[in-house]
Image (tube, rainbow, N blue to C red; front, side, top):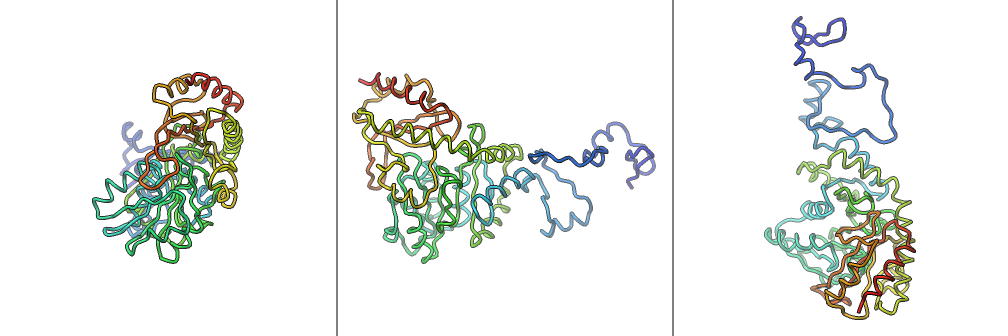
Length: 404
């Protein structure tokens, strides 16, 4: 039986506790430390696997699934729940859940709703590792994948089969920046009882509301704009009410979670997203407009520019743009020739991912399985960071002077 002495220290069966046991069994709650309740602007970060119940009755309720609160370290601790709720409100969804990466969010969206014998449609500009997962892993479980044109709209119907269970969109795609006609696709899917999911990382929930356009699940690579500092890996999925129970029960079953410290960083990034994204948008448009005027440049792929083939869709569905876009040169330079341009850049780091404060560049020849207006072209992709855009333009200008 547990008792306390006159100093409030724990004793058992009338015997004073040994020092080693006392250190181990110390209760570090604020009231035990005789502190007033702490209130910070940001939620506290908890590092723990085991959570203690106040009573055996609470533990019994937990065993029956009736306990109102987390029961274990994987059961979404405070910072995770705070971030999820903030993102859910922004997405205007039913529930939001976190994953260890953007790819994990895509994978588990598919896993939650697909079964053997199903068929899925995936736009041909979707995130490459996600497409690879469909082909290499889902195919082993008798789930077929068909890649469809990245600018698909109401013509989605021609690709649907009786076994089609889910459509995965990404608008715009993060390499070639085609846009889908989202309301047209979701209207057809809804009539046929097909689930729709959209990777909304480029626009974020600030500039595009997928669920308002009929999408069932909105996917975010939190790693990018929401985190904002290129130091965090995380994904998120927000689901509508129709599929909310299925998705949240799946999430609980697989015991997925993100650490409280990572969720804390994501929540901190979310607070400044609007300010950062506006700067990314303005700087990217300035750089993209400048590139369109250069004789060395063939085309600039930025949905917010009037020259973009789906600009009319952008104006209808989006309330803003971000800092990621691409362009091609007039000449088809060799790798060595292209290196003269790329390696002379001062402000653009060479690295994958995007959405952080540092400007980045990648360059790759595009491969597509469907008909594409960019097939075989080398696209220079720019992540415009938070540097002064005039410095970025001067950097690009001097680097172009090294092209043959």
